[in-house]
Image (cartoon, rainbow, N blue to C red; front, top):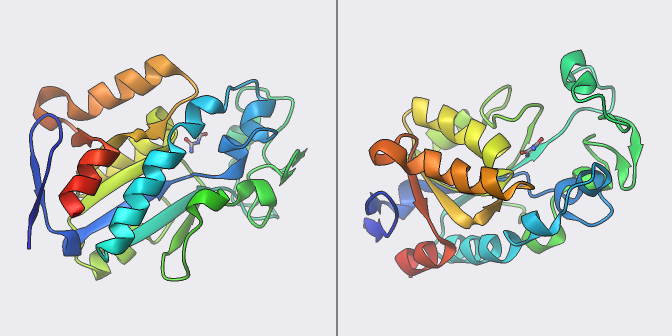
Length: 221
Ligand code: C5J
């Protein structure tokens, strides 16, 4: 049975059986005090506001029996999948692969790379390990979604203007309808958070819809 989701720029009709919740990169290194993000001088509290709303959406999706997929940004321990350009970019004091406060930065298997305990996946919820910003690039995300005949994505996660945006833009080109949950996303830069969400819903829904965690929970009741 289809449901109606209150959203901007207009209401979105969706079928929970053909909808997936996509939670992007809610990893310790981005969100936890003492992680990589904080080491770079970012205020992680700006991202942590997304945790409770994401938990609300996750619980509603689990209760509704929706397909839930989590992603993590990171690289294999040998770093052969890390483009030298990505390692160099920004000339950071700590690079991907270096020893950070929670193990090697953005390396699979390290504590900092893993998903925060508040949102930890169940064994039935696939985790997509992605080497880039775009969750479709170099991953089997599209295969998992096509196998389930998914047409709509409800998207939460961090950061709004980077991995959320890059993924939603690609999803849009692949023909998925995307609803981004505003309070369940976050950015280290408040102006990017605001403009990132504006860009999604501009021009009648250029890349999709913007909604809230309460509106998702209401729609799934
Ligand atoms: C994500 C990043 N997840 N900001 N990564 O947005 O580098």
